[in-house]
Image (cartoon, rainbow, N blue to C red; front, side):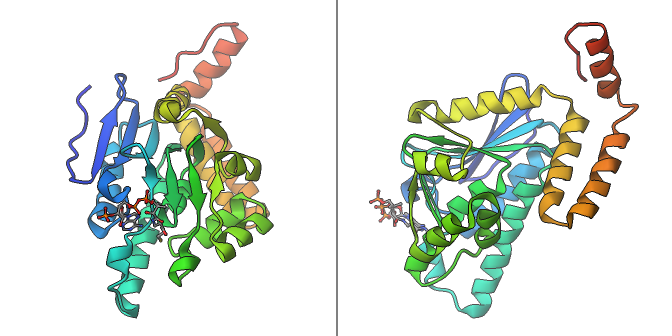
Length: 263
Ligand code: COA
């Protein structure tokens, strides 16, 4: 398989041998992968490049210390209200694009994930933390609040008390505290973090594509609509999968007591 073209200075896109799992790496290690405007703009481009072929995506940060140390403070320090709003809109659009990526996104939180870095991890579907991870919505200490979705996505993922402590106090949770809070699904040794996330993504990628997409869309509705509308949405996704190759193959394989061969 030929990997789709993607070229950016501070974001890279790599593929597994099967061409089913893409790894998007924020690659600005000298600034602990802080998201300046150039890097932010490159992320949706990378997602677009991965969209047609990826059956699962890993998001991570380059270097040994950080996942993403947040929005770029040097840049933010120069902004007035109108420019801050534009930067906020851009950050929101990037996090929305990660959340809406058609197949599951696994964040490999391989170090510091502060501010916008925490928000990037929150926009993923699933989070794997390295033992070195330190995660926080630390904006309060900069005189601001989470501005790329953190007030909403954090409070939906972890207990309300935890979210309020993190946002009010800028508390930084270590990997075990993240696990206890439900902020990440598992903690793995630092050096195995990205590979482990890629393995998990590979297991997801082996599942039937349309069912995965439908499952993600339906799960995302939990945050978009009242339960009654979400249940209606689920009915449409569920029934819409009937007649696909993978639905027929999955059920036939079960009935024939063999492993399915998905498309
Ligand atoms: N924005 C811009 N630059 C950042 C950054 C950010 N969010 N986080 C780190 N950097 C830069 C530092 O300015 C430094 O650059 P320099 O070498 O040119 O001086 C480089 O990354 C290394 O950071 P440094 O602070 O020297 O590393 P450290 O190991 O001592 O500390 C942190 C690491 C993550 C604890 C510290 O960098 C930090 O607190 N960063 C800000 C985190 C934050 O508040 N994020 C939320 C923003 S919304």
